[in-house]
Amino acid sequence: MENVTLEQVNKNIILLRQEIQKVAEIVEESYLDIEDDLDYEIEESRKNDRKKLISHEEMKKEFGNDND
Image 1 (cartoon, helix red, strand yellow):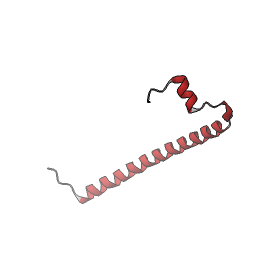
Image 2 (cartoon, one colour):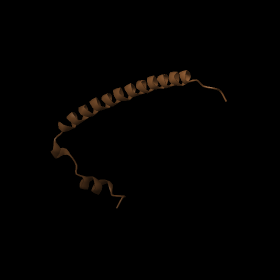
Image 3 (cartoon, helix red, strand yellow):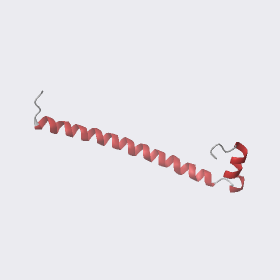
Image 4 (cartoon, helix red, strand yellow):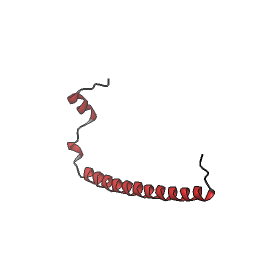
């Protein structure tokens, strides 16, 4: 078994922290991109006329209801 010094352990922990920080930044950036896309989709959907929407009951009648 290889002997490991505290200095090596500390160095590895610092490297792991740096990698975790990079991953966190990527995840945050991806989340912000998704959030922007979602905001756009919500705004676009609000422009639709609600009278043109099909109710859940109408969808069940048209396509059947396999779950009941």
